[in-house]
Length: 229
Image (cartoon, rainbow, N blue to C red; front, side, top):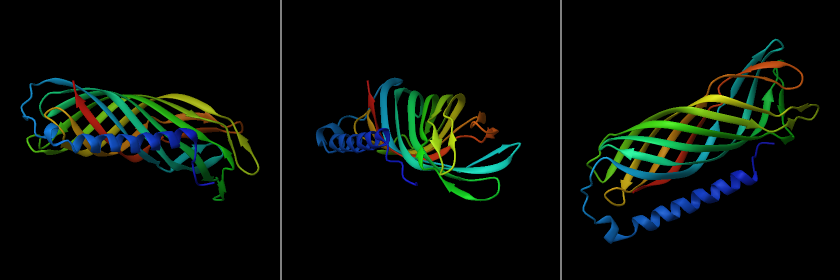
């Protein structure tokens, strides 16, 4: 089972398409785009984005040995409030990453697919800083990093022979971003960005053994809009 077609994932994908269409409509308004580019700093803005995430392979260890676990690609979304200091920005955001466990290679090197369950929801609150590298251009590359709290909720799951217990963990979370934004007005932008998100390590018991789990991390990309207030 290597697909993740969950209701949450489909909803987030639809939100991503809707957000992109909204941003394109904004950008297609000539009068709006031709406004005076002068703006007073600092100013507040709302930010929203949606896209996809691709979780990394995790290597987990315990007394029984070491195994690798795989997760199917899923959907992501992020909403928040930011402050622009003319080239430097600070954002407080809520992020959701949805995916589904797909399978594992056990301690003896044998591959198994999960046959049911394994829905994953990682909800995070981040405080992030960004550097707009070429802020006097109509398009602006940027870099960012953030730290915060992540709640990892993994539903119960099973392979052809065994069923495993669900778990929920409160973890440290972090993210790194690189992207490019395009001016819509003096204080509003549309953007596309690449993201790496991760968590601290954590312990679990699947009903059979104790495990120390690697960071729940993923690569991803988002399309979004920032609207000045």
